[in-house]
Image (tube, rainbow, N blue to C red; front, side, top):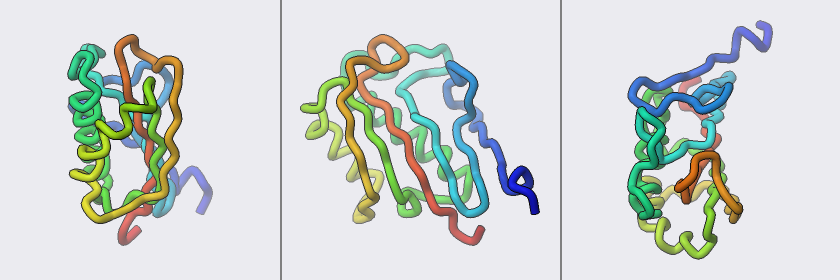
Length: 134
């Protein structure tokens, strides 16, 4: 089987449209690579305004939709990368993260960045998951 036969691009209806040349996720064999999810609505407006917790909730809800479409859950996430415009917001978004992950603890990396792709965004999260029964 060629690599192209194992590769599947995933776009989830109802999520914001891509702002560049990418899809929501790519499945390759039993691995799922989820693009950086942004707190954006269908018109590319920032969800939650200036509230990083509301933005994080929107991001995790988007991750949940992608995982469900792929037949997975947060328990299947192996690694997350969190981008924040203020590293001090980590403590504010941790309860949202714990709500979605429950007792599952993925490998994780956190970066503070000067800005994100859309003005007003305070958080973006990407993930890698291992898919069950793939």
